[in-house]
Length: 237
Image (tube, rainbow, N blue to C red):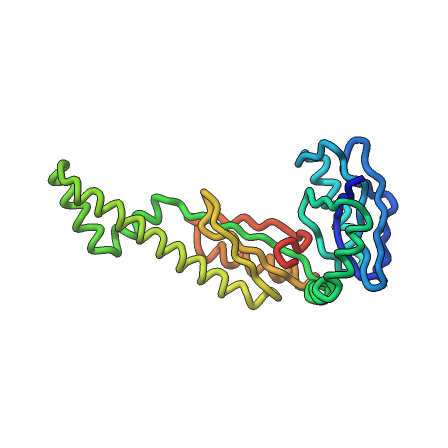
């Protein structure tokens, strides 16, 4: 039967799994696959597994329980191996890499930060600061048929938006990085120009949240900060 994998730990992890249920309906019973140096927390894989809320919560609850007792490499939702034997084989084959990752994330949790900026506020800034945009804007206002100028204006505004968002995102990451152990910048979303994860030591999570709050206050109401966490360190495994 296929094996669903939740997380990987050191062999000496206490693996307290009482009261925690696996994915599926009915909930799968958790078990461990062990090698000399590592353990994997697994269960039977449901035949019709989908990212339903109940299963996503169960998946993360297993990982949160493990992380409360020591380092654990959280696997992405839906990771399935052919069987327990194959899972054990991968643990043995990748033992050095997994052991190194476990050392890196020991005592740490992940925070994900997404930042958006009001579009009108950004366009007003571009209009005020870019002579080229103002010049093309005036041309298109006085000559509605100036197709080339309209195209050039759209391209220039798009370039300015991208350049300013890239610069703002880099500045924010630089300012917050000292409060974290590591950072992982992901692709922007449709509505957020910055999408970045921070690996933060457990004892410094309050200080990190305060640093994000201070950054948000300094940026002002035109910016929307969304901080999600603490989370299992998905982005760093």
